[in-house]
Amino acid sequence: MDLSRPRRSLWRRLFLMASLLACGICQASGQIFITQTLGIKGYRTLLALDNVPEDVQEYNWYRGANDSVGNMIISYKPPNAEQPGPMYTGRERVNREGSLLIRPTALNDTGNYTVQVVAGNETQRATGWLEVLELGSNPGISVNASSLVENMDSVVANCHTNVTNITWYVNDVPTSSSDRMAIFPDRKTLVIRRVSRYDRTLQCVIESFPEIFQKSERISLTVAYGPDYVLLRSNPYDFDGIVMAEIGSQVEMECICYSFPDLKYHWIHNGSLLNFSDAKMNLSSLAWEQTGRYRCIVENPMTQLTMYRDVRIQAPRILPVVHRDFSISGSMVVFLIVLTVLGGVQLCGGLIYALTNHYSIRCPHCSGSKVGCWLGAGTQEPALPPEGKQNQRGSRTRGEGISQELSCQGSCGAERSAPKT
Image (cartoon, rainbow, N blue to C red; front, top):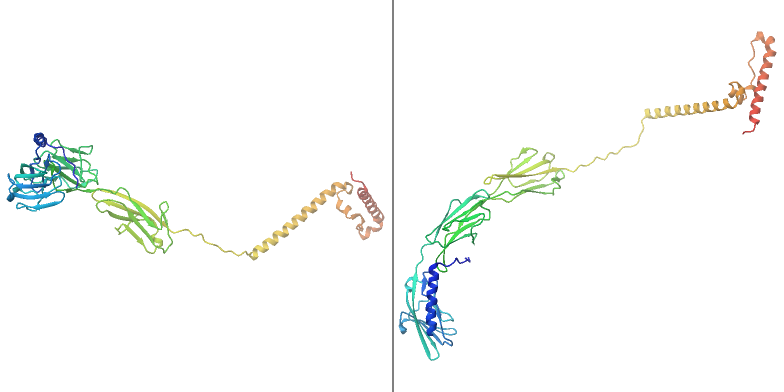
């Protein structure tokens, strides 16, 4: 894990100032010198050389204040020739700049170290003291609670150490005070208000020595959240909350939502609670009594949040096809015949009435007997009187009938012969 470096402490700056002062003195004299004289147990230590001349043919490192053969640790001839000496432990090597690297460093590595640099006809020597220190224990960490509810609970973390150079890490990322997080002035306490599901781990890191970091254990937080929403997916697909399915077909329904911890599921069918607690319901062969409204209810017992979603299953409506043959019953036939006859009679009566009314206006001399006049009623023989009165009234009656007939025929003939205006 790549941790960012906290700012250096005061004694680190003083150490650098002393090193720069010694460097300036050695540079003024043109002599090589060893810059680093502090090591930490368990870490690597680099005894770096400075003011090294050019064209060096050989670097020889010795344990102690003299460069005797028995004290030689390692000899290095650039570019890559190394020769171990009597004091070699397998943890030492020389880099291309001639510096001695010890990894890992032990407490008994404390002491003097001497380097011999051969460049041309000149050989230079330098001696430095290495002090190996042992770090204290790693910082401890504690929290007031590790099982939390999102947006409801807060967490307080404490870093147990005497060092004040502390950096807090949330999800392995260094953090500072913000609207939701607060770090106390002594930097030993971190408060996270309204924890989020994304607050997973907490850790504090101290810098006891320059660039030497000690980490506490990583605390994992368990944050309960959700459900934020719920979806009800079905096969066949629903349209506007309605699933159309044939009777006898298979119907699948599944409640989908994201939450922690695991949710509890409840199903309601047409207002009745079903004895079913899975997220997915399968109706292998749909029956009529299985149609209707279904409701899926999801419940998070930790966050005490509940949500639901409805869907309706119904069979498609099929309109019945009615086949009818055209037929008329006997009573209907009689009724139609009677109705036709009555209609014909009424029609004939109306026609006769119209003709009678028309010709009564055209022949007024017929004295109301226009039909008889037109049809030649005057040509008919008049009725004879009774037997006893025939001789007395016969001549007069017959003569009167003849005169009326001639008068009517004359009038009707004149009407027929008259030109139409």
